Image (tube, rainbow over all chains, first blue to last red; front, side):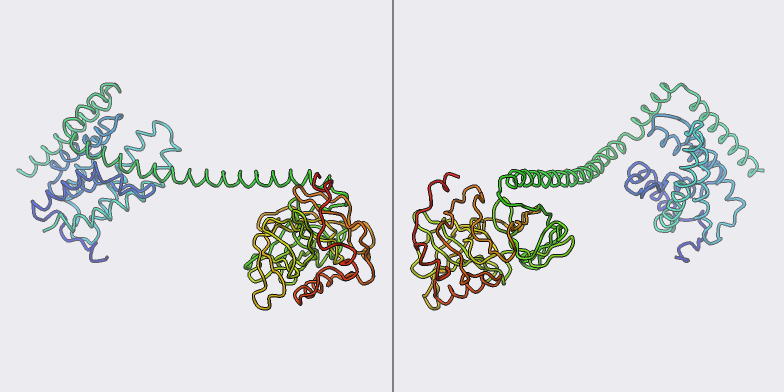
Length: 166
Length: 334
C-alpha cells in the first residue's frame, strides 16, 4: 500500500492513457457514483478527474476542465446551476497553480490533494445548498464529507496509477 | 515573459468562468432548470439514458429488498394473528367446557413441555395452593392429556399419555358392545389399546377411561380405534392402534380435574362428565371392592394382566358387567 501512495510525478504520463482515465472519470461521474456509494460515502469522480487534469494541464486547463465538469454535474441536478461549475473552476485553477509550487514527487501527495479538493468543494457546495440550515450542513460536512473524501482519494490515487500513468 | 502571459491568461479565463458560473447561479430557478435540461439533453443524453436504465435496475433491486422485508413482517404478523386466533378458539372451547362439568376443574397453563423427541411430560402453572394433588387427571375439551405426578406450591409436573410409564384402564364403546382394556403408549409413543383376544373392536370405536384403576373417572375420552391388530408374537390378545383425542402438540391451556372425595377413594364413576361425541354407559350396578385396583400403579398392573392374556377388567366387575353391552341411548343423546 505504501508503494501505491509513493507517488511519482503525478503530472506526467501518457496522453492517451490520461485521456482514458479522464473519460472513465466523466462517464463514471454519471454512471458509477451511485453504485460505488457505501452508506454516506460517495466517491467524487469529477474531483478525481479535475485534480489530476489540473495537475497535468496547469491553471488554465484546470479552470476550463473544472468549469466543464462542474457544468456537467450541475446539469444533472435541477437547482443551483453554476454552483459546481463555480467551485470546480476555482479548484481547477488552484490545483493548476499548486502544480507550480508543490513537490509532486512527495509520496501520497496526490492522495492528499484529491481529499483536500473534495473537502474544499463540499464546503462550498454543501454550504450554499444548506441555505441557512446549518445543522444539515454540519451533519453532512462533518460526517459524510470526510469519509467521502477518503474514499475519493483512495479511488483517485489507485485509478490514476492504473489508468493515468505511463 | 511567456510564463507571465500564460499566468495572466489563466487568471483571466478562470475569472471569466467564475463570472459565468455566478451569472448562472443568480438566474431564476425556472431558467436554471431550462438550461440544465438543455445542457443535459445535449451533453449527457446518452449517459443519462444509461444511467436512468441502471438506476431503474438498482431501484428495482432496492424495492425488491424492501418488499422482501415487508413480506417477512407480514408473515410474522399473520403468524401471530393465526396463533392468537388458535388460542382464542382453544380458550372459547375451554370456557364452555369447564362450566358444563360436574367436577371442579382447575385451569392451568402449560408452561413447559419436554420436546426431546415426543412430549412425554409437561409442567403446569398451578400447584398445591390451587388445590392440585398428585394423580389427578389432566384434560382439555378434547379429552385425556395425562395425570399429575409431582406437585409443588405453584407448579405441577404432568405425565402425558405418551410417557412410557403411562397406562390407563380403558372402555371401548363400540356400536353395540363394550370392551375393557388398557391403553398405554407403544414404540415411538403410538398409543395402543390392549384387549382380550376375542374382543370385538373396529376402527372408529371410541375409547374412554373406564373408571377402574383409581386415577381417572369413567368417561374421559382417550381416542378412537385407528387400526385393529393382533399380537403378532403370541396371538393372545388384540393390540389396537389408537388415534388419540388430544394432539399433545397443540394444547396451551388445560384443566386439572380435582377429586371431590378423599384421595383414598378411587375416582370411579363420576356421573355427568361430558365430552361432545363421546357417549358411554355409567358404572351402574358395578361395585368397587377392595380387590379393585386402588393404587396408582393399578393401571399398569391391569395392563400387565391384559398383556398376559388375562381379562383386563377387575375380576369381580368382569362378572357383574357383561362383556358386551349396548350403551344407553340417553348417554348417546348427550
